[in-house]
View 1: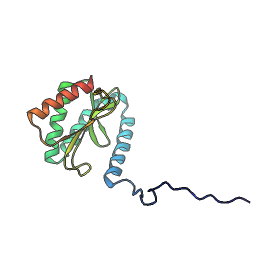
View 2 (view 1 turned 90 degrees about the vertical axis):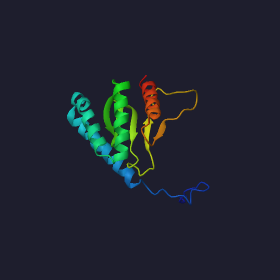
View 3 (view 1 turned 180 degrees about the vertical axis):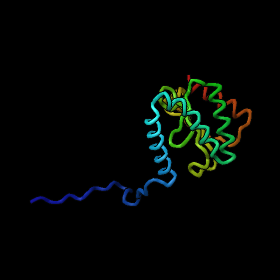
View 4 (view 1 turned 135 degrees about the vertical axis):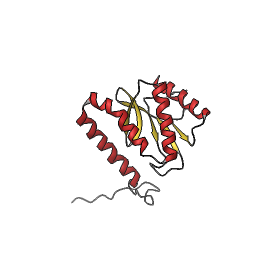
Length: 158
């Protein structure tokens, strides 16, 4: 005779429920799947060449405030780290080294946030001891902001 085991519950988990992904997160995953399909169809050489056009088209489709920031970030990356290849990543403009994303721009509109962000992956060379930021809020393209972005991109691209 076997007895059925009841699942054990950790304290506090009975109340917490996973509601699933938001509509914005699901859309980003769909965009990423489409990007992978498109890249596979193009082949590695053509994908690299078409990345710039894809990124510029995505930037052009952004709301005005996000578009201005994204254009400036794109120009800074192309100037400071021309070896980083532009590409889309989860529907966001991103810049990669050897096929791996180093940094990306996320519009405020993407996840209905109050500010756009400039983010860095673990491929970025921004390490500072045992703690450092990997995402920065962007609200307007000032000279000081652009100088800081250039410094961060330069370090990240190493």
